[in-house]
Image (cartoon, each protein chain N blue to C red):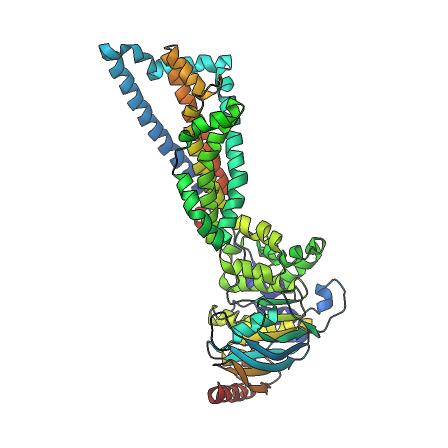
Length: 280
Length: 287
């Protein structure tokens, strides 16, 4: 039999006319809406700065307004201070999140696949999950030889749960027919893991990582109030202690921008690995 | 009739040409798909005193089944819902183990799944994160035969008429096209035995008709043994050489009959209609 056999049905349909234009329009609309939202936030910030500047009792904080903050940020960028304060924080978040992924994903797969393990682990994991990560701080300080180790542990504790539970939920939702078909085609458990389970739950894992990253980034700053002398949390503390409010404002802005950028990267990864047509 | 015109009628999507008789001699022989290897005979299947009972059940759902399927034969298991047809197919495939008796393929007891015998299920259950070609090649990948993929998959996709879709995501395909990918996937590992679990029941009538004819023709061309589960008498008459009618409680074979609906198996031919009517009568009388 030749391809001509199916000449009627075999022709791949031509790309929809104007598809690229529609995508560009969609992007432009998204960017426009984002810019409008950020503009509104900036306006509120400016209004707050103006109000503080007009209030005699709060005038000392006037440097938190957008003007002094951006001015200070520009100086910090030129001096390389932004990178110097961000790199240690990114290092700690990277390690904490990485360990959370290494622990959370396999554990989530096991919980999703094995009903007995799910039942056994549910109560203790839910109990541990509800403990604020920062409440582990004294124990972490005692248990780890370095400040970095303690902070990475706190980030891990904060990040592991969303990754584990999102992974387990994804595994539970896997179509049993996919596993049956793969078995029928001769797949061993490793094949099933690589070719079926992990691709099927990639979106769930990445969604868990996105949630975990958000929590980790929030936990990072108070965690860096510990004895370390580097990182964004330390920089905030230091700026407050030295009454350098413009620097404080600039550091807060850096935390927000980096967090937003990391979240956007996660979102891109989710879109890249999503196989659901509705999410495309 | 030319090769192309013969094949065009089997596309599965052309509602106007679906009654055109097919010429199996026009098909590529198996050797051309297998890169010159000689055609192989299908598997011989023996069901020996087979019994099965699901956990928690007080009685057998299948009881004392004994029959054989000759190599290259297409056998339809026909019966009402719940008579154990799909259970029997899963037992033959090694997806489950019987509580007593056994399934033997080419004399060897079936104890697990194997790429030599594959099931096509009612739903194609393709993997939506893969392309058409990647789905079709999955069995070869599992068998560690990745080197065979470039030579084996393109001819298979051509055979099921999906060459132009090789790099497309399977979610872009219609139901009939997805079932054709599932067929290519099933044939990729060069099975001796194809087990069909009502694979066309979810398709529209035109696509179903065309695929019934296509699969029979491909199976005959490749020399495959086929066991087809269906509750559709017409489907059994179109596709099978022989029908085993099953009755429930417990599931058992009550009729074993050879089908002879005419050489062309044309739906409108008197021979086909007479054979279909005979099978329907047997079914009503025994199932």
